[in-house]
Image 1 (cartoon, rainbow, N blue to C red):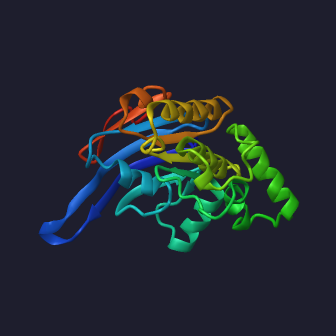
Image 2: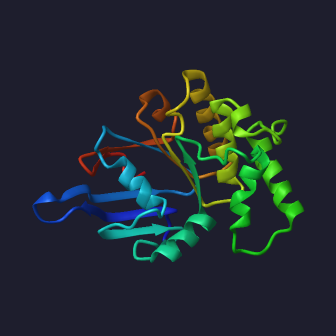
Amino acid sequence: MNEHLIEVQQLTKVYGTGGATVRALDGVNLTVEEGEFVAIMGPSGSGKSTLMNILGCLDRPTDGQYWLGGEDVSKLNRAQLADIRNRRIGFVFQSYNLLPRATALKNVMLPLLYCRNGRRSASERERLAMEALEVVGLGDRTGHRPSEMSGGEQQRVAIARALVNEPLLILADEPTGNLDTNSSQEIVDILRGLHERGRTIAMITHEPDLGKQAQRIVLLRDGRVADGGER
């Protein structure tokens, strides 16, 4: 049985054909243990976003293997990948991706509506969403819409949404990219608090001051892991 939450072996992603091919990932090896907080860093074009898309089951590698929670997900079809995303991964994006007309509570409840693992009652979905919002310090903002909240608050709603399905992995893609310095630190503090409670977090960031607050930095360069790929 696989002992890592994430294990990637010789992961390759090639775009284009013939003379126009680009090797966005070129033999990446990476392991992440359950409960780790890892920052994935590297210059523009290093392969960070491509790796994040594959770790998040948003894309498949051209070659190589990816195990998540002991399951080889690298060869799954689109429907199977969608199921893995819903059940096992919580996403936090730079642009928040909240529904503008929905309240914070309803935005956080969304993943529960698509969950196939048992049908939860409306009251249970509301309770779980409330609990997730309280974890990120927004228990008093449940009825507010995104336009009534600051950028930092919107990102905290997004973190609550990522938490609500109790995922194996939280993937945060440049979660502070649209925020000022103070709000950025607040978001990283929340992620660190979740890590301290046992959550596994992989965060892509280009900001060294934020990356060094993770437990480990994985440095990508030219589609390869230059440092920190294994614990």
